[in-house]
Length: 194
Image 1 (cartoon, rainbow, N blue to C red):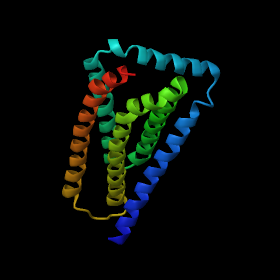
Image 2: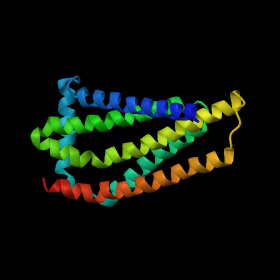
Image 3: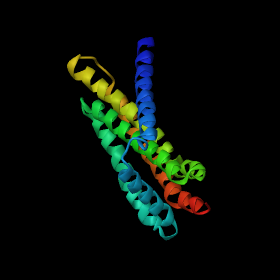
């Protein structure tokens, strides 16, 4: 039991390390890109914030739903595969990097005002990263259990583990939908106040 706890803590620490590294890289990436790319980033962010009053909230919700549920399902399915844990780490790293890059880019474009804008804009993305953190944790754990089951002949109560893994997916999907409702309908309206 103590060994299992240590292994779970190790996996938690690894995922936390991936988050911290990708977040730091994403935040500082804006300072390493070329001036032409900085102009592209600035134009894209300005275009987004200027277009908030004409944003179609339902379309925004549907696109977000497809992207986020698709990502959750990909991570969940990769957890079912034996070697999917490596890809899960890569996906989680990229998602963290993109969110932190967006966060720092808004601050880069809008200065001090950008701090408030980036916090409001990114809050749902950070919640989504938390959901993906949990899903990635269980996906990697499940992948490791499958590896041990098939290659090291360790016996597990497969039905209980599969049910738990499926529950994690369902709960994650519910929170993703709730988070997307806030992100698609509420956050743009709050951002319009600034």
